[in-house]
Image (cartoon, rainbow, N blue to C red):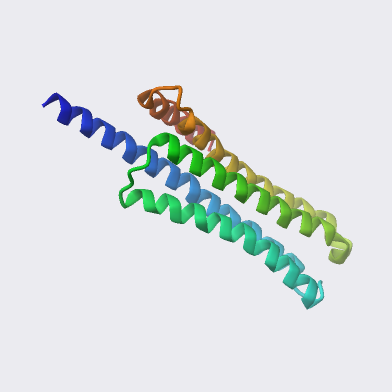
Length: 173
C-alpha cells in the first residue's frame, strides 16, 4: 500500500512538472509569434525581397528551436521514462538554443534598421519590447530546466522548488 501511495505521488509530481513546462513553452510560442509577426510587418515593403528572405531564414532557426522544444514537452505528456534530471537538461539545452536563434533574428533586424526610415525609432522600441518579452519567457524555461537538472538535490525538493518558481511567476503577471 505504501509503495502505491509513493508511486502515485511521484506520478502527480511528474505530471505537474510536465504541465508547468508546457505552459512556459506555450507562452514562449505566443511571444515568438508576436515578435516574428511584428518584425515581418515592419519590414514588409521596406526591404528588397532578397533581404526579407534572409530575415525569414533567420526566423526559421528560432521557429525550429521552439518547435523542437514544444514537440519534446508534448512528448513528455505521452509518457516518458526520463528522469527529472534528464528532462531538465533537455529543456535547458533546447531553451538556450532557442535564445541564441532569437538573438540572431533580432540582430538581423537591428542590422536593417536603416530601411525603416523616419519612424525607425518607434518601430525599434516596439521590437525591443517584443523581443524582451520573448527572451524573458525563454529565460523562465531555462530556469525551470536548471531547477530540474540539479541531480545533487532530491527529486521531491526540485519539484517543490519548481512549484515555488512557477508560483512566483504567476504572481508577477
